[in-house]
Length: 343
Image 1 (tube, one colour):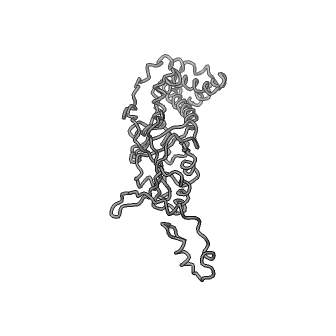
Image 2 (spheres, rainbow, N blue to C red):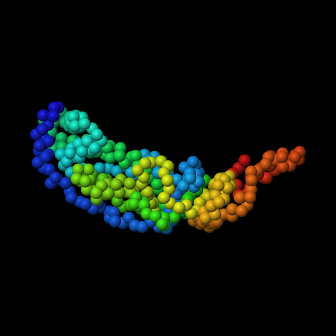
């Protein structure tokens, strides 16, 4: 289908113009003004790996790319097509131009989308064409938006250190740690609480106002919906997020104040981290365990003294000479000191 062949349909869409847009500046659900001051402490559940060790030793935090999230709906919004097909076309043209695409290539892309929006089975493609054309334009708009926002990284924190599900999901089935950060003494513009009542869908009208009219408030609404909206089933996490322009390891803007060791943490990790933090007594070390008669978790402060004085274990033959020690006795000598591992 040539560009000339679809001109009457395009002019009809243009006459309807902006009157089809629903001017709703405030999304449904809770107001975005609910972004409150963060609590005094926030917590990061994590496995013990290079990223978590860098968080402790190198004062770095890891902002994860959204594509790595365990929830495929998180940072993957849908698009509400609440503006006309002509406005969607104008928006896509602007997004392509912002990407540096040449004018001729932009037109060819628009023509391609229009061609595949025509149903050869129908003699009158007016309303049906508009619907299919809007859908195809919307898919391209979402693709370009994900290309931009998908490069950003998300640091997920919680208000709670004692949530059993989070220990299981994010701290390697209690074999990991939970890092405590203080939030006092600094301000991060992008540190906000997750909204579990916000819509999942972005409004095309907001993206149009942001990209085509330079509306900063519309841009903020798009950003908040993209990064801070989450399904209500996740509300138990009481999550706060910091968004970085670049995913990966970034300098931390938080002060580390405590480390919680999960119930299944290998003794060796406790020993190594006590050694690493021997000059940092301001960082409190906790062991986490479960109450005897309930499922609630509690914490107790670790004593560092014995671990700080302890060196590496020597082999049994060096310690006991030629004394005949069976495997069971050797295991009893070396598997202890709070080590719950076997063998």
